[in-house]
Length: 247
Image (tube, rainbow, N blue to C red; front, side):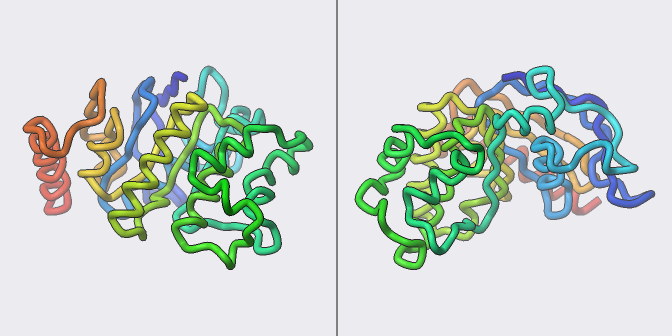
């Protein structure tokens, strides 16, 4: 897909810009957004999702198009998925029904790919389990599988793995990769972790604390964290963020 952002600026109130004059075309299938706390990373995700509509905000300027559609139109067509930091599951629904819920709410009969989704995240043996019977990692896998139930063209992730230990994060990134490749989904993720951004995403956008894009790094493949290129980019991004915070 093609994501076009043209002169995007956004404020919740006058004289306090959150995002400031962002222009870029995004065509990569895996995109990470990094930057200091409060730089507008999560706000940018919500603008892309269509949750924040231009007509509802006085200080929303510029344009965003997703394959030539406004974000709210794209979302209304069921093409956008969103996953937050904490998995939210319905306690009275088992694993299968939690994953299939968006299909039922959309009056679409669940199809065979719900079983496939459970298999792709390693939950095929737990389909009758209720959320209180699952570990934290398993709940996150249910939430991740659920975001793919409608086969979204765009998936937006707001640091959903940040509270996990390294072993669980590695497993979740592998499952995300399997799902993304299976359904040909573009993934955009907010993260504070520069290493994970370079290792798991082919396009890295760096925002400064004024909500401006100060660097874009584009790779044809995700970087090996032991490579010289990885360490070079890591040092560049880290230096830019430290310097900007000190300004």
